[in-house]
Image (cartoon, rainbow, N blue to C red; front, top):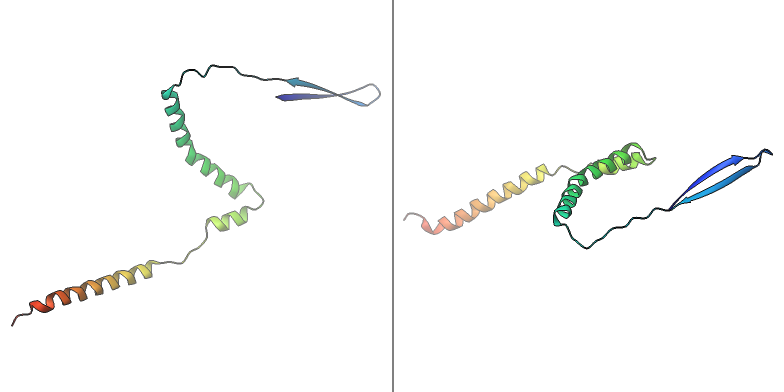
Length: 110
């Protein structure tokens, strides 16, 4: 339900308010399920989901008063783990070479 408010000023300069209520109702029959319409609704919803996230990010970064904090949390700097990854690969190579040495130990030529 919505209301329309109009304000008029009387001859004495006193505001006079009138309110008109507008009632909106819908009717329909839910007797038949349409799977085609349901699938279309589902795919439209899934297609618009990334757009909603992009819109929310844009609004949060540009419109709100706390946009500086949002930008800081969104682009938080994390440590670089590439050196750790290289160290893990090096340890894996050492472990493999040690295992090969142990397996080949009994196969030495006499």
